[in-house]
Amino acid sequence: MNTTHKPHRNETRIVADPDLPTILIIREFDAPPERVFRAYTDPDLVVQWLGPRRLTMRIDHYDARSGGSYRYVHHDDDGTEYGFHGVFHEVRPNERIVQTFTYEGFPDGVSLETAVFEDLGGRTRVTGKSLMDSIEARDSMLKSGMDHGVREGHERLDELLGGQQSNSADRRTETGS
Image (cartoon, rainbow, N blue to C red; front, side):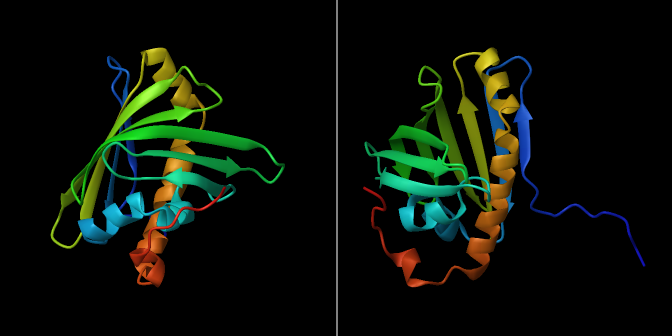
C-alpha cells in the first residue's frame, strides 16, 4: 500500500511578501468561473462556505454590486461573535471583485481586497490580494489564524461547488435582521 502523501491539487496557497503589507491567496476550483463567482456573491451561498467549520454565520446584508456593501457575523459555540463589514467598490461578473474588509474587533484595520477569477477551461483560479495599512497589520492578521479559516472555507466551497445545483444558486435573498 502506498502511504505517500499526495497534496490535493486544489490546495490553498497563502503568500505574504516580506517587503509589502500584502497577502496573496491563490486557489483553484473544479467549477467554471460563473459558478465560483456566484458562490462569492450570492448571500445564500456565501453563508454556506465562508469561514471555518466551527463557526456559524449570519449575514445582515450582502449587496454584491459596485457600490454595494456587506456585513456578516460569525458565531462561536460559546456565543462569541466576530463581525465583519465592507464596501464593494467593483463587481465585474465572473471576472473581478474589489472590496474593503474590516474586522469589527479591530475597526482601524481596513484592508483593500481584490479577487480575480481566471477561467482555466471549466475550472477556475481565484487569486485574492489583500492590502493592509502596514506590515504589522498584515502580520497580525496572519497570526490571528486566518490561514486556517481561509483553508477550511475553501474546502467547504469545494464541497458546495461539487453539489451545487440547487434552487438557492438562482436566488438572491438577504439573511438575518
